[in-house]
Image (cartoon, rainbow, N blue to C red; front, top):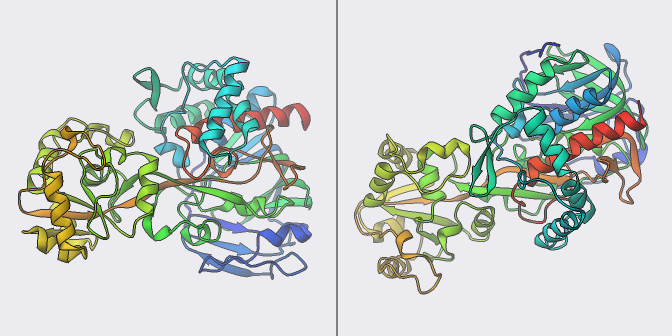
Length: 531
């Protein structure tokens, strides 16, 4: 089997009609306007033929498309998406006895946002007794304030030993340890994990992996029965894959804020959307069926950064993610202990304020340049921890000269004026902070770097949204279900497009763990029950 690479001119394309229209199932799919307003479908449940809507980073065609495909192929299983959920589903299906599996990837590279992922939480030691699995599920459910599904969590912990052994032992994916727990994949992120799984797929004759081949719609016989998926080739032709089952492992919505605005109350102006190809196409495909509208998406604010800074910006790591940061809000007041600045919680705290400004002086920039930062937020920033950062001052100078989120001033009063905060408040907060004792928020003295030496810099901090989690309801077999949990025959889902794992804040490590669990669970269920 060869992994085919083809050129693709746009990120994604989704035609949300079914080959046989799904009737009222389209009610949840219809018309998300550019403003994010969601309106109901017409009573026929189908979109007007040829209707399109511009959804930010992706353009989705809504059609009641009954035309013949250019080609029809019969396969056992189609997997949509090549992250951890997609590869674990495709490989497991072949290993369990499936004869023909097609994995469709819309991008020109494999892995999606798994390439930026940390190691699954709780991977080693990964064996849970029955009592421990239920206790872990109860604890995770409590952490989500009752939003997550305890049966999904229990099932994931119950099967952890087998699934993590499959990943780390059978397929040789490496991991690095932080204290007594695994923290990162080998190399610091999931890129090497995807490379190893792709290499394993290369050896399987029954597994075909196609890049730059987006799925455009499900093929339905009725709203409760999926019969395959339509895909679009590089040259614009449509191929209908008739299959016993389809697994949606398509990621979240973080790269399509216009669509996401119709699914969340989040103030998206305060977030930065990263990820790879996470444009909500899987959610819209699920909405073709009796599943109806996707719901409860968690905006995963995994860290903070400055708008227009790159994901791995050294300056972003230093001013937005360190316990040595000094932050004030739109009133010039400190509002938290900045020690949590590299956690998911800090992103949510940032989102509660009108603006968050990270203030640093010339000595602070020099300390980061000479000694590096104290902590990192992903494997991409490992090299910055405890090591000199070459060119940091150049990055600062570039930012303050060309980014309207970054400012420089020779006095605190002038800096306050430039960023629009109360000058007296800012001066008072800095004076208290420079004593080295934080009576108000309890920050450790060693992390309280003084703000004393001109020039002074201010960087507006935004919440870094690596992905969203949730939207598609599944049961413990990873089957997509309606609102009363009746399964949609032939449709499964895996990874961050699925709901039931998190509350309003990302539950650290759940993305990769649930993708692995769902992908392998779906594959086993399909082979046992449908092939």
